[in-house]
Amino acid sequence: MRKTLYLKFLLAYFIFGVFGFLIVATFVSSMTTEHLIREKADALYREATLIANTYASDLYNNETSLDTVKKQLDTLDTYLSANLWIINPSGRMILDSQSPVDVENETVISGFDPTITANSYYTIGNFFDSFTYDQLSVLAPITSDYTVRGYVVIHYPISNITASSNSLLNISYLMLIILFLLSMIILIFFTEMVYLPLRKITEATEQYASGNMHYEFQIDSEDEIGYLGATLSYMASEIARSEDDQKKFVANVSHDFRSPLTSIKGYLEAMLDGTIPPELHEKYLTIVLNETERLTKLTNSLLILNNLNTKGMLLDMSIFDINKTIRNTAASFEGTCKSKMIAIELILTGDELFVSADVGKIQQVLYNLLDNAIKFSHSNSIIKIETTEKHNKVFVSVKDSGIGIPKDDLKMIWERFYKSDLSRGKDKKGTGLGLSITKEIIHAHGEHINVISTEGVGTEFIFSLALAEDANED
Image (cartoon, rainbow, N blue to C red):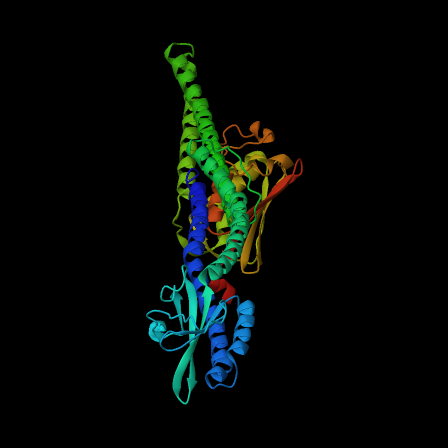
């Protein structure tokens, strides 16, 4: 497109110019000449008719002299720039505005036939070989007592009409040239507003096709082409970000798999070569078992996250009591809370609060949030879980008073494998996938999850669920 579109447009532009000149030179030229001939013939015929009904008629009725009529014809000759004749039906010349009166030497138009004009009132030609160049000739009959006594004939050179036509054509050519030059504005606008932006877009698509998703370009336009360029740039940036995330994902997975595998390999080799004595095998086998459990947990989390990212993820929607689910999830952490001397306080709206969601996945969300809250809370602290109902929504809050999340890390916590610097020392066994899974589950329900945290004070996660219609009706 980049190599041919502009050339095609230029070719169309020049074809427009060439055809414009051809049309003016042919159709317009012939139409202009024909129009001038008809217009001149009409004017001359009116004059000829007027002469036939006045001077010529008076001449044949002996009401005026030949010399008087000759003077009138001479005057009209000068005024009309035309040759005026009065001739008999037989072709004998009576008067000629361009020749003196000569009664003795008669001039006869050989072969004169008044029907030469056919159904018209004018004819073009040399008028029975009377001229050496073409004339526009009009004939008006001179009648008396319902009898044609003669004819008034006016001859006008076609060359004069051709000259007038050429003058008008010159104006047409000039207007065409002006129009052609003005139409270059369209070409300039096309170049600046269409072609150059399209060339930028084409170059960008070539860069993206070659794998350079970080190629940047800008189109300063607010029309459809500008929108297309912005959309293409955004698409490329999203693909580039996705590729970077994929690389980061692979690197993180490799790191999180490599660490426990290295530990397992090291302990097993030490036991086999005798570095670790048999009496300590049980201790280190327990460590190996814990590392395999860590790998199992990481693998399961990856499978869950992959399923959640699948388009058209199926949810097993049902109506259930969110308060009961929260109580059951909190009860599962009773042992862990006792060991860390952490209390879980439930502030629930009503005895029962029904929501419409996938109970299994929401239970996993609660498990992940509560697990994080316990993990990063101080001993002898309280974790609060609260439910509130508002605008046909149920909002669930999980709030701790732990180490908090640094402000710069708040936007990053939802990314896969992300761990803040504060959490690395406390979360040796974490996979960094819990919050990613939580966010995906909530978004799959068409709901939202937010976080409020202050470093050193604590963190609160709040997510929404749809209130069950039956509960809303009650």
